[in-house]
Length: 400
Ligand SMILES: *Cc1c(COP(=O)(O)O)cnc(C)c1O
Image (cartoon, rainbow, N blue to C red; front, side, top):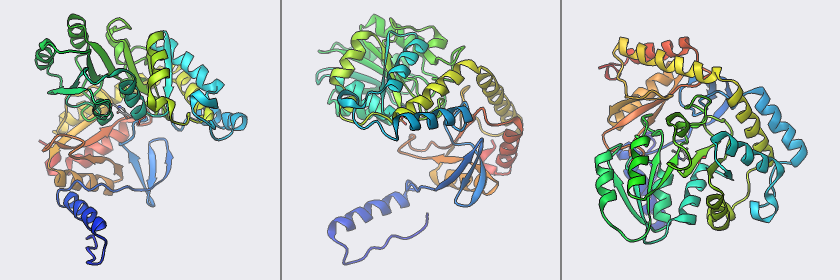
């Protein structure tokens, strides 16, 4: 931050144009910088020589650093080497991938699951396999960028409704159009932690013969009695929500993603999803790590219970201290401050106090709603949260 870009008069015209674009981002507090993480251990991270309590990771259950997950990864490396060697359809589809798919299908109570290399690629894959040009893809305006990109990539007709606005969704569904209609939504909105009204959305889809696509990146592992996600929590099965996508890089703490659904759905994805076909399979050792993580996620319900306790602790403390709160009962607890510049300043102050919190700014969130995106994980203790809240109360604009 704050470094002025060199507008060298001799720079080629192309670079000059790029520099002007970068300068524009800086002037609007939209410039993003990367900080180098040097170590991660439980809720602590070391970034550029300083240690922090991390309130920015999506490792909701604290499984990423679990010794058993790490050991499974290492064992997999010994057996399979570092990489898959090829894409799934060439020769990269290994036994750990296959076993993981069976386990994910069983866990989500769906006939089949298909492993993708990332969630971004899974969403592009759903779109490239299913969305045709005269189809309509209706999306919540707060959906993850990968879902928006997926519809654009497939050149389907993309229409969006205001966040969680069921009335607006119904009006869009009532408009007769050629082709098939898909309704696509995050289950838990990644920037505010709120839940989509999935039961109502599913009922509307049934009434209007639209196909529901649910991205449960942030609910999988966290929601539902045994962690099987938002759909499981709400009792929505294959009939109501035929296409479920979730990732292995968040609550599972590793990497990768999957789509779960019917036999014909998965077979269609294998045949047609370009982001499945034309990319290298994730390392099989990594799939072994995900398998171990999934087993722990299922077996160790205390992680979810502890997380729920922390969420309540955070919300009660914030309310008591007058810290601004969003309306979220998930591990994502946003504090909306409005201006990007203010939010960056508050995040920097928190870091100075030893708390790693990240400012999320437009275009990732709507204009004027820059926020701290605080995430809680099973690695935290109530004392960590009390410390963060105490630091927040020292900052005038964080309290209302
Ligand atoms: C993180 C995320 C993705 C992308 O998953 P990756 O595996 O990180 O590519 C997709 N959808 C949502 C809602 C996400 O939060």
